[in-house]
Image 1 (cartoon, rainbow, N blue to C red):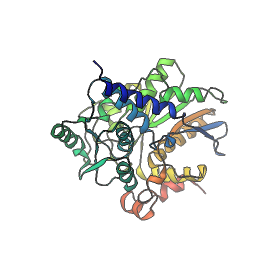
Image 2 (cartoon, rainbow, N blue to C red):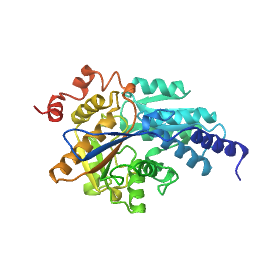
Image 3 (cartoon, rainbow, N blue to C red):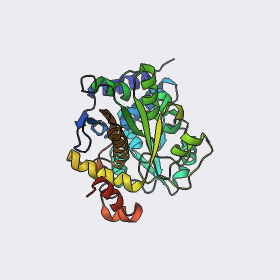
Image 4 (cartoon, one colour):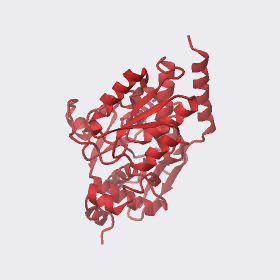
Length: 346
């Protein structure tokens, strides 16, 4: 039987949703690609600042409805930052303690935001330890390990209910090319790509789903091999996307194509997009944009016109010390000049 507190908690989350308008769909054109329209769905405008606000809302509702989250239940999550920020936001809304288990290399701004919302940060040196350490804390504290990497694909209603996919296609309805040629998405948990791919098939849209994967992530190789035992000996340098193991929420069969994106290309594309938008996107958005440009080049070669859609996952204001710091980039990413030259050929 549902307790009064659970009823109150679900109502609080639904009320928060009603207070939030839908995110904007930004359109721009590039001279090098006539007849192709580019769209960015700006998920940085959510109250907690990223695409992960949607996921955190769904995970909390899923946990409450399943009876896993009760009054005073400590919430534990394995996250490199944005999911933890959003979950800390909802934990504070419900008056629950929250602990983020995260790599020691996580951007300082994200750490500050988690603490701003009242959460604690528990650091691990090896990103591959995130899961076991989260499980240990949940056991010791009698808490709930949210486990975004398992539940992301099932906590969201992929058929609609104002999910990210339904929102995109509704906002595209009056555009010159209302049905996108391709939707481009990077994968962290795999939940958003699963929602997009399922929705596209469910609605019968003639749209391809391209998933872009950063270096040191196993999703690209898994998509080709279907070997779920794949492992990487290091974590992704692009926060929020890419995984060192195959996550349960990553569904390869709903994806039409994957592209591996070098970290240097991601940063170069991020900086290029900053000039187009007049504001800073996060690094994962750079990965997305690089993928968009590869599709646009192919469309241009084939004489095709149409629309391309991706997500602006979070703001670059979270990364002044990392991706927007040339010294940090040189040390951790390497020389990005070859990628910049590809974007700005003479």
